[in-house]
Image (cartoon, rainbow, N blue to C red; front, side, top):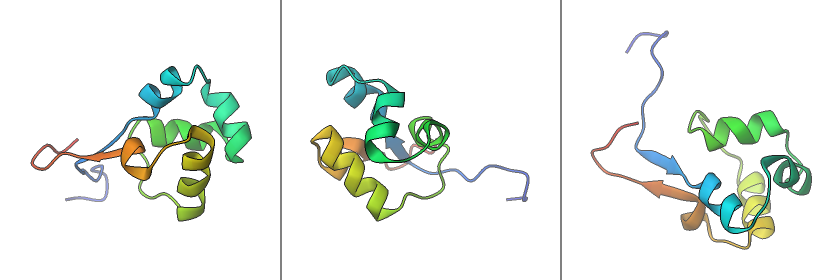
Length: 79
């Protein structure tokens, strides 16, 4: 893989679904979690390369979910 190629992975982020189920906006979630809307948008769109456990913890606290509700793994299905 060349440096210009994006890294592929089989992890999906279900932030859209969780926000819709809780009738919450990305901006509201960002404020409550303490991260920028831009960083949450990168996560939501599957472009994040990493997530801090502290951020994952806050997301789960605010959304009332488990990490497995937020993230999924699809073997053999690279994004």
